[in-house]
Structures are given as structure tokens and as C-alpha cells.
Amino acid sequence: MEPLPIVLIALGAGAGILGALLGVGGGVILVPALVLLAGEPFPAAVGTSLVCVVATSVAGSAVHFRRAMVDPDTALRLQAFAALGAVGAALAAPFIPVRGLFVAFAVLTVGAAWQLWPHAGAPPPAVTAPHGVLARAVAGAGGMIGGLLGVGGGIVFVPLLHGLAGLDFHRAAATSTYLIGLTAGSGAAVYLVRGDVDLPVVAPTMLGVLIGASLASAVAHRVSAAWLKRGFALLLVYVAMRMLLRAFAHA
Amino acid sequence: MRDLQLVAASLLRAGLWTGTALVAVAGALRLLTGEAGRWAQLAASAGIAVIVAAPFVTLLAMAVRARRSVLGLYAAATLAFALLGILLAR
Image (cartoon, rainbow over all chains, first blue to last red; front, side):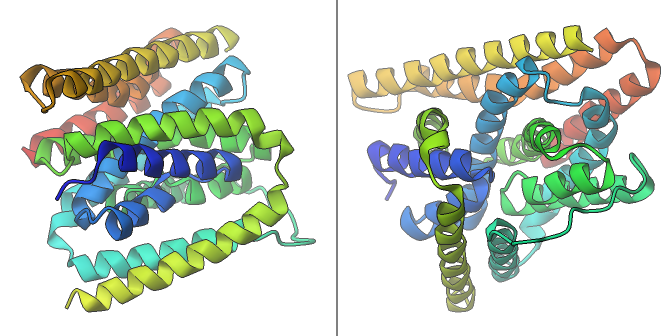
């Protein structure tokens, strides 16, 4: 049975709020929410999530472009590789067992939790070759993660742009927001054409995400980011365990 | 470069507002008629398509505006990969 639109708007708003407050893509929240709470099949959850990720990216990057925070040169140079990864992964997804996708998502979720946990005294990453082969390969890997698991790939793009392409953290985060839209858009187009995006589900969820992200950006400066990050990291570990349990129940 | 960024911001904002308005119209039609009719589905599909297309239109506009052939090639490759994905998924 299809979930009620109000439930989907609420799920989307929750993902939008957490995504905007914590600087993570909505996908890492939306995919498990749609699978575990709304009962959506994994491919439909991934397709729906990708469309919502594009919407949040478009909203966020419009603001970042206006504030001159996006580096268009770096974005243009790396985007083709990320798009190639996303399209390849989206095309390959139907041939990968659902259990494998659940396990991969659980691993990604634990990785996101690790990245979110405030690490005191962590050394800044070293700047190596901007636009080098490694940077392009990492962009392709970020695209693959996005196309396969329905996340934007920010977990890969921000360290890539900051550590390998040499952008300062705020510019890296802003440029990543724009890259995420193109990567998720490339993957979403494949899911849309294949019919893996449920329109009655995606429309209210997307509206919810946009409402949630707008609300969160108004109160973001009043929230203690460190405690929120710790709490959310623990929630992500719980989500990873639920996804693993679902993976083995799928057999 | 600043000009490029302002064009990108305007295009993204236009795509977002147009797409969101179309999805909201689809939702309103569904509420009024009590079912997901043809027009509601058409409006929702158009809204989603506009939002998904917005970053690509921006990419193309930036590449054209930058007037640097290497950036144009990267933008063309990105669009080609996205279109290839659509063709192969059909």
C-alpha cells in the first residue's frame, strides 16, 4: 500500500532538516527512511532519493553560486567522471543482488557516521595534485556510490575537493553541493526512464525535503552542531544495523 | 567568473521555482479530484523533469559562457554520459 502524502512530506522534511543542519546529502537519511518506514522497495527508494537529492542540490547551489562559493572550473573538470560513474552504477544496479545493495548501504552509512563524528585535533588533509588522475578516479567513485545507493556522494566529494583539488573547506562543500546535483541527476534520469521512480511518492517527498531544508537553514546557526553530529552519527549506526538485518532477512 | 556564477544562480533558481510550482499544482489537482489523474501526473512529471534538468542546463550555460574549449568538452562529455544512460535504460 502506498504511504499517505502527509507521511512522505514528513519523512522528506525530516531528511531535509537533518541534511541542511549537518551538511550531509538527504539520501543517506531518505533511502533507509523510505525502505524501513514507508516500505518502499530498494530500487524505488534509490530513484526517489536521487530526485530529492537533485532538488536539495539545486536549492543549495543557487545560494552558493550567488555568494561566489562554487568553483565552476573545478566542477566542470571533475563532473564528467562523476556522471560516468553515476550512470554506469545506475545501469548496473538491477544486476546486483538486493542483499549486496543493503550491505553496501550499511557500510556507507557507517562511513558517513565516522565522518560526522567530531574528531578533535584531526590534521587537515594534504593538498596534492589538483585535477589529477586520482582526483578524477575519486570523482568517478563518488558518482558510482551515488548511482548505486541513492546518495549524493558528498561523503566522497567534499574530501576530494578539499584534500585533492585544494579548495578551502567552505568552497569544497559549496562546489560539492553543485556536483551532487549533476551526479544525482545523471543517476536519477536512468531510474526515471526505467520506471523505478514512483511519482506519487517522489512529489510529496521532494516538497517535504525542500520545506525541511528551508526551515533548517533559518535555524542552523542556533543549533549546537557537535552534539547534533554525535546524535546523528549514533542514529546512522543504528540505521546501518537495521539495513544489515534487512539484508539477511531478504534471503 | 562572477558573471558565470550569477548566471548559474539565476538558472538554478528559475528551475527550482518552476519545478516546485508544477509539483505543487500536481498535488493541488490530486487533492481537488481525489485521485492522481492524467493532468496531475503530467504536472508532477514535468516538475520533476524541470528540476532534474536544471543543473545540466546550468552546466551547459556555464561552459558556453566561459568560452574555453576544454571546459566545453568536459560539459559535453557530462551531457553525453547522462544521455547515454537514458538511451541504455530505455
